Image (tube, rainbow, N blue to C red):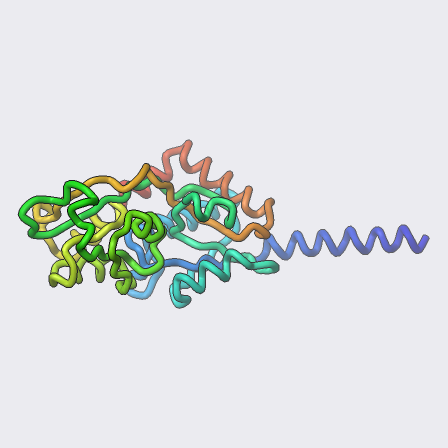
Length: 245
């Protein structure tokens, strides 16, 4: 009898824990990286924000977004989380990160490039900027790749728009970033698109995700992944892209 009671109590506690997970909200640490995500008039906005909020309608849990944690600290907090429902956006999948995180759902694909402003000609090759400083947003996934190319980096900018403005003010001649982010922030800064000089691609096409630590519950991750997959099939993802790009 005692064994049966113990088993029933264990099962009941597991059910309570499962219910708690579903009742809980996933805290998503977010980087100011519009149009993926950012704050507009104090409200979380952007492609990734809209996708996750919409995913809740398709069976994903609710999400709350935090922009107040420094990016590197947020990355470590998510990676090593044990008993917390925490995730991170926008997070680029890379070889270095591959086995350190759980890749829950793809937000969109992007391509990294070099960009310049008022050069005689756009950047043609890595070799010609070996002795130049390249501006990169602090904590960007591309930093290890650029460092391996032997480039001198300025990673002081906290946002893509600040990085662009530093280039405009001649703090450096070249920036490296995602095509989606640069195009959006160039327009937001009130700059003319014809003045943006597009250089060569850096590596292969990259994919931006909502990611979690390896101990994030598989069932919760699956619900998020399934919801985003449904949105891709029914056209909701494309509607969100069209709204921002």
